[in-house]
Image (cartoon, rainbow, N blue to C red; front, top):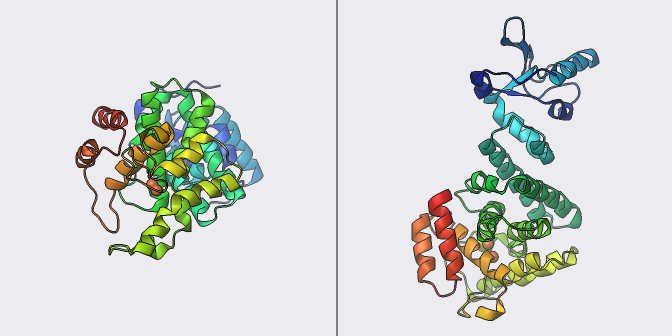
Length: 328
Ligand SMILES: [Fe+2]
Ligand SMILES: [Fe+2]
């Protein structure tokens, strides 16, 4: 096996493609240009063009070069590479050449897509695909919890149900890990993640025209929106989910400590810490993104409002504030 190339310039502009990643490409047409490292001249030369037909013999030859660490793709083709990996997300765990910000972008892309699919079709089979990708994220974090910092920077600036869910997923995990100083067990990490991503799934049951309305909602429309917490918890329960972290987040993220939330108007001791944590992250993400009825607030404006609001757990708000100021 050839040692990794020493030229840092080369690694700035090209990725070395591992055999496992190469194996995952379509068999007879590569989705992007490949380059071969020629040892005699110590530089990369073009090997095959994207979509060019590849014979089985040529494929074999490429595989052998790859086993010796000699196959590269251009970093300029990152969008194509990222798109490919986002379809088989567990490949990010195998790829040692991607940088952490690039991996974070792939998680953002893949999870938003899977989230979108699940919101359109909230059935067990689609949930399984989403869950599998969320578990790739938790596995990635489990290997090194500090990786959450790069991931949490990749929030969408504009609202949309899938985008909002991903934002809450990323920031929720960051805050959860921060509050536990990274010392969490794997089962809880997985359940917390699932809960953050799925907290608003009940919104899929609210008619789109209500969610996209720019004028104030009527009483009936508001009632429809406030049903989303029950609807979400019920839907998830119906799909076999029993984890408290998931069900409580869906049911309680709109509750407020002063009893002014919904749907049950619970107050302080009755709201689980999952519900309280999700409420803080959910509100922050909603306020700081551009919505149909309101422009985005800055992080400090949103935090300033939340600090004044007795509906939120202030320890959690302060912890979010510290995280935003020092890490993101
Ligand atoms: Fe909600
Ligand atoms: Fe939400």
